[in-house]
Length: 622
Image (cartoon, rainbow, N blue to C red; front, side, top):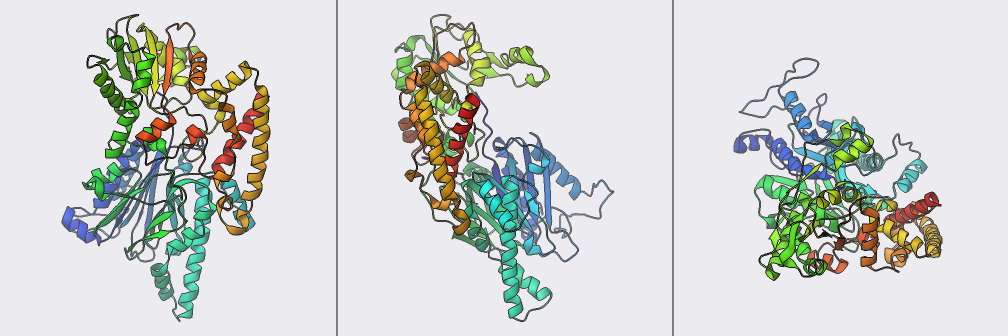
């Protein structure tokens, strides 16, 4: 019911044969460009604020462009990007026609965006900052081919202030303060050092002039750049890059928080955020696509040689479970089954909520992303009672745009964004069960959904979440970083105050300050060893915020949520049913990352930001 802005999408392609090969076999020099477009469109669910792409053309002589980039904002950004590229390929420039032609016989060496290396990106902001300058890819220019660097990624760094401080200690003065730009500058700094290392070797070998350049371009080792940069970052990430000399890389964080998949054969290397994207684009079986492993980098050098390098030691494997619950598209073979299992696991709780009265119960779902979990739940319920009714009760009317009005008028319009199927339930006799993939803030429930369901006059409304209660912020990519925004946290704090337990809030506040001071001291040590948080195991650090929930059962918090979210005038009995942590891991055993549910953060940077968030909350609430 609530749209989360979340992980971005990445797409990369490296052609391993000359462009003429693809021209002859596939009938077009735009083979890779077309595939990149398809890969980006198949990941449009991962970013609707902006899109961008970059291309590197190999073996270009001096005076000719060899790195291209195009970016756009908005939900139709992908279309804008590729429409602009099409115009450029046809010679439609603002400053007049260009002398560029492409034929069906052979690729044109001067055509823009026709090259061997491609990068695409779909953006969802995790910082709240908008504008074209924040859209990936980011490009660092230089007259030395090997020093040109273009990066994009699906990431959020929790310790960017520490990395910023390190760069200023080096004497740099970054122009922009955000994780994308600072990451680019840091990696660019280390790439410069790698180029200079090869320059020294080339001169020692007696090479001169263009011979030095050729040596550098063919001997860059991008793993040196990654090993001297990525260990300093704390966060969840998949970082991708291209260099002007033809290096391609994709590196994954040590816990495997963010996803990355690849496919390689003798023609192509392709990388994407989701497995079905590669399956669709290249007509592959599920088994043909492999994940990049935690802490590992997939690297293709200028000669087209593929290698894997362990950049950082792999840590406890904690990939994001929200990827499986909500973010990734449900047409992945395993995700489909996992989401069905999430719904299936809730069967007994739902039966308890309706008092076993399946004869007078109707089951439905909101929104479309919960449809697969609904299948799992409905199949399990029909195994109990084959006559139980499963209906499409609510549909979203996408034509309504609430931004055109203000205040009370906007709230009234928002309550009509969804249409209901009248006559599907018997008034005052049927229980209405609706399943959602997650309930995070509860805003949409309060402002529209509950009011809409109430119009059907059911005997009882049961709202089911296929995910557990979201109790803690995420700092690794999802747009939910303020602890006070979560309805579970609001309910917990309301119960503490209602029961005269304010002393626990004060105790936790003091403990948070103490642990934060320890963290700050130990993370400062990264300036000497270059490793984020000096590799502090989170298992050694307490998360005091978890104490706040200990006095209450999940059912008590659910009941308080209903009090806080019930709209004025709605008297229908309402019950919340949430997935348990045990049910989550039973359904999704291979993706154990659950810090937003349990408070068990995988990195010290994530814990540090949680402690700051709670301390800030206490300051604003006092």
